Length: 162
Image (cartoon, rainbow, N blue to C red; front, side):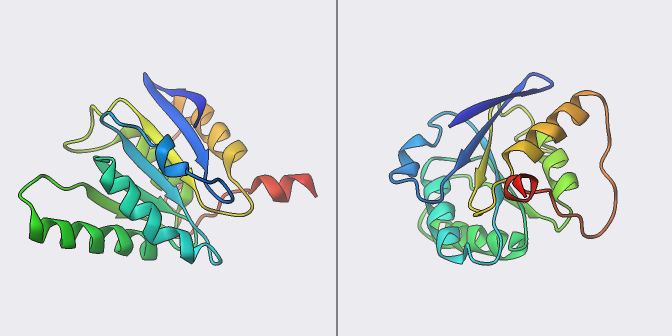
């Protein structure tokens, strides 16, 4: 996990899990929120990420990328199965095709998990979005508001190299 900086007083961490063995052990043990990024080709990572995040007591889940809604569904399925077996409180999920807006929402955390001190960005993509997230953090700290466009994709780190 890499600390990217803070939005307001909330630390923002980044973890690219593709080709990283034992990434599950890097997940936080204290109260936290996750922002997931998954695209086509990342399908095999989505269900293990959902399971591991819920195992590590994530409080809220925000999903972006091409598979945003599919990722949210994977988390919801895991939550439903666990809810059937338990009375413990389960996390809330949200997803959007507007990457910027979903990240903004994750940093502002509306609702019960507004006080969660830590946000972890779990990147399942091959192209990576670390630099884009850092640029969004700076904008958010400067009081920027995201566009309300229905679909807005990030600029991937791999695209910047070309």
